[in-house]
Length: 308
Image (cartoon, rainbow, N blue to C red; front, side):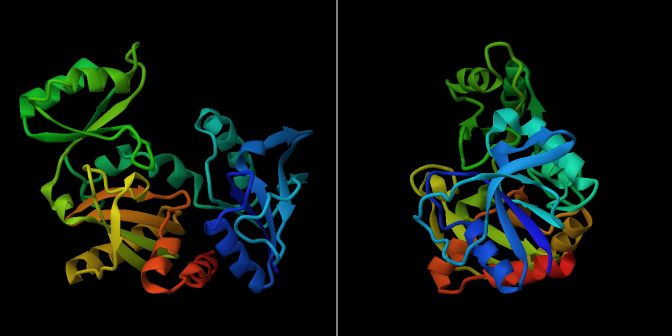
């Protein structure tokens, strides 16, 4: 039996999210589970601590969050299922780095730092075939790229999520300068990324769940009302299968990600383009169950534990 800490974003009520589903599956396998608020991480006389509560089989979605108690994070395994508040990310990352020297962290901190953003992906087109990408804190420089090269572009933050601050523009867009100035900030001190729009995404974007170096499941997200394929922004979802070329690529990518320390991820694919790799608590388990009636939580946990 292992002692496993699940780092979650605490809310007033428990949610039907990965942490409840994975916690249940881990407990079924005899592991001792503690759920700890990621935003409560701290340092106390040389020990990394956090506020958390032990797993109970009575925990269910909609219940009030149990009382949190100070807990030393000295577990055999730490599974990060949220990065919490972004303003304190660097401090939490440094505390997690200290933890990682004596216990395994899922996913690896290198993966969380470099695959969560899109810089690394854009510099490895042989492995991660991404659309033409530029990034800078200089709004005028990015505007020049779009005006010079023409066509449609996506403007977004390098490490954003949930479809927030994602804009579709073209080289003749009268709002281009205003959008880029908004994204880069009044002092031109916020990095902004632009990617050439790829028409393949109009047929939908496939979210593929990968665990322990294997493809676990997938579904298609189709924009509805605007260009974004994020479910949080109103995208439709439907069952889908992978074509043979997609399957071959995803299996190869799953192995590559495992080498990068990624044991659980959601990849977004508009083949042949890799749009994003989500290495922090990727959604999809609940969506696939809604679509198919199959709960993949057990498959995810089994594959992750086997890879550990």
